[in-house]
Image (cartoon, rainbow, N blue to C red; front, side, top):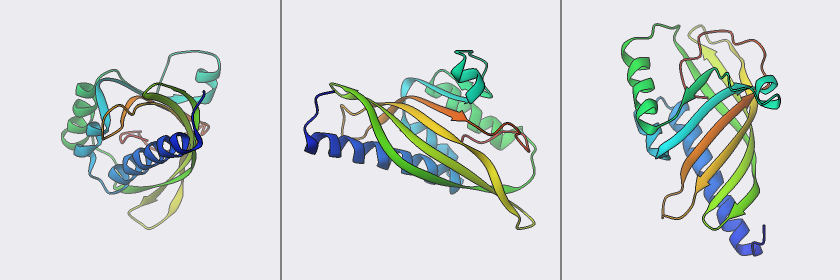
Length: 162
């Protein structure tokens, strides 16, 4: 990866902003806008670290197109029944792992807090994002977003994106 310091900083800022927007849309329940952060032929996965480390494909959530992301949100709004709760993401710094022309691969640690209707807050999910991001246009977009989670027990049905 032969990036100048200024180009590396610019790409890191773009990736950081994209991840911050991703978290904000989920946390603020503006899920209908969430698929707009992805290219049409994207991949979105939420996978246990154990499966990821062993190159197993079984994922808690798997979508292989923007259309599937849209369908997931429609299903969440119309078909799923789950306890009322809200999320709050805490993101670590985004690190560029590799860069090739206008495509970068990044890693960002995350923790998702869940607050239930009774006001109790707990750690819902924690892990790392591994992202491939297209930075060729004015607005960077996820090519692939993989949430590799360390949390072994998922307390409630995983309905929202992580």
